[in-house]
Length: 334
Image 1 (cartoon, one colour):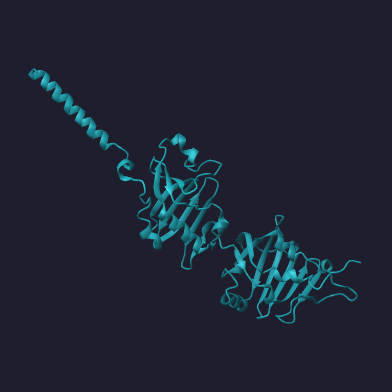
Image 2 (image 1 turned 90 degrees about the vertical axis):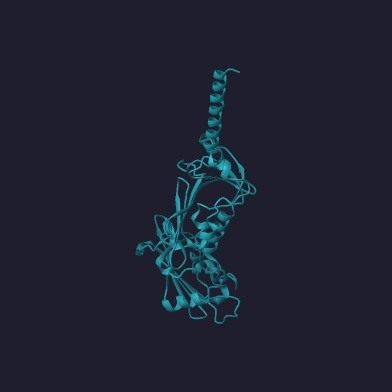
């Protein structure tokens, strides 16, 4: 081989070596940094006690959950109480997610896995952000479709998408997070119920003793007969497992919008007053509970929120139907 040919061969070999080195250096980080089975958010577990905010966005709505000095609340629901257990469960599940199978890197295919940035009108993908007490983002990723034993995710600054080992919901439904139970009082604890309708129609039922099985009608007209001895008993279950469908900051009630004023007296002298009213053709309820009664309810773990008087609730229709009951509904028809 001539000296000139040798030099050319040496130059070509050196050039190929440089190209090989560069090709290794420019490989995506996940090729060398991410392995199947690795925990996805490795730094999050040590920060669990320092998390202060969770944001969930799907392009249609946004749920913001924050921690205050009492517990977790939902910012987009006026600071209403959130169930601590649900927050804890979701955060732990985030820390348990592991890489299982790498999927597409092509942005045009993200939507097939619901991993496109949530700006569309379908709301299928969810952007999840988790912050610490210093307002630093600890985790930022898009949550996509759910499989049998995993979910699809994409870290916000990565092209790669992944099927994970481990499930995660991070629901965009507010009521999945909110403490929707308002009060839970058993029927046998109720001593007396008064329903005063807007047209002055009044129904009053009561029990003399806690061991009594049935409520009796206090204002039973002369010569009128109840449909049965059990006819009024369903009223006593109104406060049992009382949950809301929606909640707002307390609305001011206009007299002409009032449908019924209610009063529930318990055998422990607790008094629960409430007003059902209409606003924009929707039925709502405001509670008015005095401080002593409120304290007793808290001590007996019968109420889920400390500030019930500050809120206006939308209840299930079946509960409103109970309070719509009138005296004539309980009597034998002529």
